Image (cartoon, rainbow, N blue to C red; front, side, top):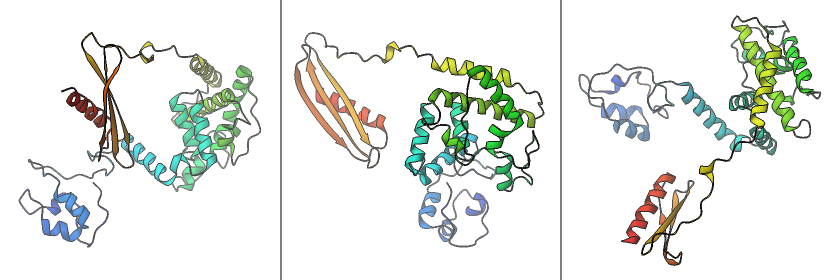
Length: 317
């Protein structure tokens, strides 16, 4: 857990500082003096380890206390969701995300373009703006300001890929506004879905080539990269075969002399109120009886389904 704050300036850095000396018990008075009541109660409710363990710096956003890229990603997504409801506070943002989601591209390319739109691509200009780099020169052509637009569109390195893409796909890129270009690519009035999928995928290969150069690989392979894009686009355009297991099956009658009970549950996550319905029919399909139930303080859909099954059994008895 990460405490909300402290009420005093006691020099506490380690968990051991909150324990009674030479014991495995909390120093209740100290905990209650330093932390707000809510945090103090949470700390005092924590079980102590049965064996002596060393303290370590804990990552607050994972219950294990261990940092992982996944936990950092989840925290970032949650923060974006809190500050920008519906993945964006404006109608334009919502339309952008829907358009991106509908493109037939690989998931990692979709994530890449999300980073481009959200200004999360670590180009030299962004790194300098974040005080992580002293200069913003392009590592490939020497331009004094490597923005994401420069890296993916204007750079001489990028133009090699665009030339190959034009030859292979007959792709004619529209004149893009440097201020809005990442969203304009997804605008159906500017580019078709297929053109947008190709453009975004090509820029993904450009960025990958640029990163390879920064890590010592100076071999550019624009033609091979664009051919890879062609293979990916074609594979994603092939309609998926219908999954037989996904076909909705009709209700099957029970054997002679038996009844069948069907259940279903639903949950409103906002207020924790759930409901379930139970219907009993005989072997001819005729209605026998039914029942509905309400459940409060529920947070998990699977719990609703299990409660519905339990009540169906009780109804049968």
